[in-house]
Length: 118
Image (cartoon, rainbow, N blue to C red):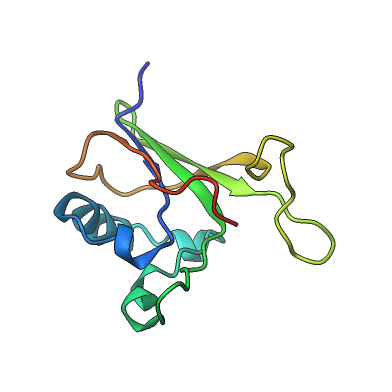
């Protein structure tokens, strides 16, 4: 079964401005992932000074339909709470299932425009 949507979680406010990503954020807001332990503070993006980034605990969200299910790639953390490098310029993650209540309007792939950010 192929994915309905694979979305890279964007943390730079300037990467959150396209109509498609704003629609994704509106849908994501209704999914209550923070209550499931997966934080993405995109609502504070407009208040950040230039060069700052939004805090997120996961790198990607993958959604399947038929049946509806979701998985987030959660960053692995060291003992100090820092992300663990994966040896290829990114950070180590593991998948965790999440409960979704609906499908987003977007479908396909929304890559992170800045995947090598800290």
